[in-house]
View (tube, rainbow, N blue to C red):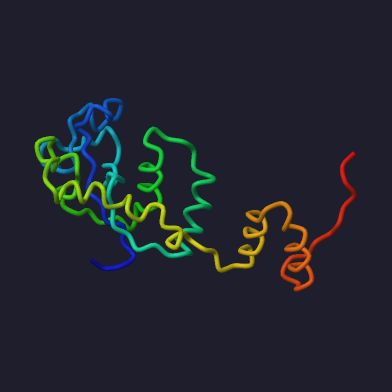
Length: 176
């Protein structure tokens, strides 16, 4: 898969959760586009829309920063992160086969399979691994570290940071 694209399975507008959408009301299915044609009176055909339950993307710090900036100015929607990701990656989205959609591929009877249990359980193995957490490489790292230190050690840490020139500390009188 070429880098810089956001790969995910196309969402299905046939599900009841889409009952308020024009796609659902006319029976439009982006997975079977020839089944029902998009009517001209509804305006332009909507862009492809993916299910954010499983996707493949190679992140970068610049995209991370853009995501954070965009999420602050994006109004809330019905499908929260899924709508947001669809808006953000609308020009870089590439569909992958619906075989990768857990809802369509796995039925209850298959949940006893060891390979399925491994897939479903796998992410928990690394969830609490702090070594995989993002660690900023900017000047904000010492400030974050200072906030996480016990109150007794903060004064010494801030004094050392101030002396080194990393953090400028200005003393102010205590509030009344």
